[in-house]
Image 1 (tube, chains in turn red, yellow):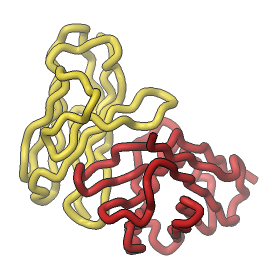
Image 2: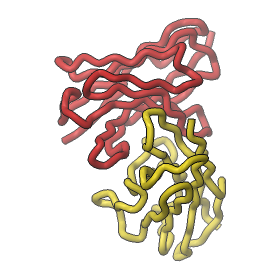
Image 3: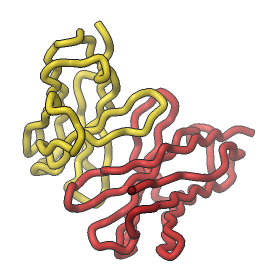
Image 4: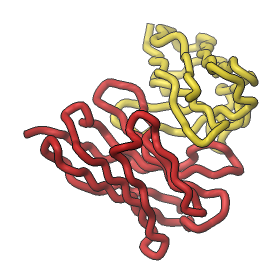
Length: 120
Length: 107
């Protein structure tokens, strides 16, 4: 069974760095054609794509957030890590990780999401 | 970056209605488009990939069509479980985005 599970702090203070971990099972981060992507959704708003890391370690980031984001993976631990610097209250959102496969050109499995609130 | 314009933003419909949601891309994306359904408090769920391919387990009342810059998601006969928000997403380059979403409400 393919699963993804996000974990990390529920509360962060403004200017702090957020670190979220996506732990995967049922597939490998090194399989060709696989990538893991991060998406967020502020309360009551639309989905926003943040970035992705591919099986070959290529990384792509949202143009508007590129300067604040880093995505990395540890294949041996089956984990993908998102860091976002200089957090602000507008970054309050539910953060999702999801699997992308080239054979379907879509996000076919999503984590349940983790809610992050930025407040002093 | 590609911009996706999804319409309508809200749709009021009754059980049994035929419902159509449209996504327009700012540049041609071939057939590289997916549709997702999201219910309150839940993660999105894949419905359609490559514009018209039905994901396994998704009811056949859902269908997708289109190519290039204009795409549609159709629900042939709306069911109570279908009241949700729907998003489109293009996949033709390295930088992704989502449509603004269409909320399907009970009329």
